[in-house]
View 1 (cartoon, rainbow over the protein chains, first blue to last red):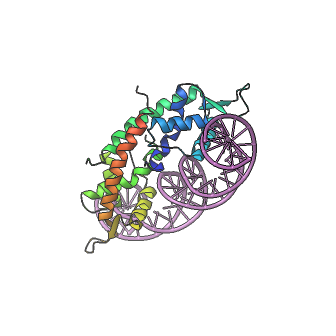
View 2: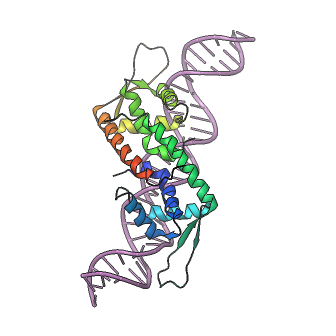
View 3: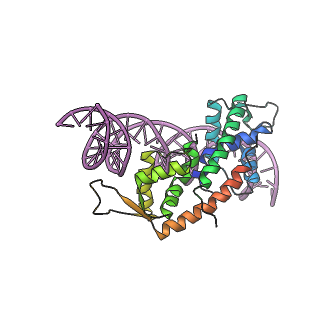
Length: 108
Length: 108
DNA sequence: CTGTCGTACTTCATCTGTCGTAGTAATTTT
DNA sequence: AAAATTACTACGACAGATGAAGTACGACAG
């Protein structure tokens, strides 16, 4: 199991990635992350929802409601331009991070 | 610059790696990390020293003093068997982490 | 012989993000 | 009708990173 301290800096990025394909909402994103990671990473509910608040506060995502849906009050999110820019930044940061950390890793 | 949240889970691992080559002390480790990462990562002093306390408390490193040294009170550390085991664990965890995170990263 | 720089730490207080616990409430499945 | 799943929200605790500040020794310049 992956320790959360490692992933810490990438929860937001994962969520943003999930929104690249179009709007979505908490539960769906959560399941998709789980599926995409092949069950290797499961984001905790509280982590997920607090990430939404943070991301929205930073202007990286925008929330809205769909009326006409059945009674489940879902909050949908879409990624913003700023969010996309931030995502891209994080992607290139990740490349550097990998390079750096790999220098401290002994194979086998 | 690499954000600290990403590295968070690997500061301890980096320190342990530095001790694989033999005993060392704070300032030296710090400089070596800096050098090995090609200036891409500089561990903050407070982070480094609080990591030492944690690592020692967990039995992953052991501290000692060399007498006969000039008046600079250096605290030396060496890695323990448990520390080595922990380091190896972290290394294989890192492989999984990379695989997982990479699924959420779009190239270019 | 004084001041500055580099070495080698320590203490303390703060912040951020994660996570456990718990609770609400609707819909779907059994 | 009960149980499970969906879809959240609130609250409090905790760990690790960090900024700011301070201590103290040695070397070296001016």
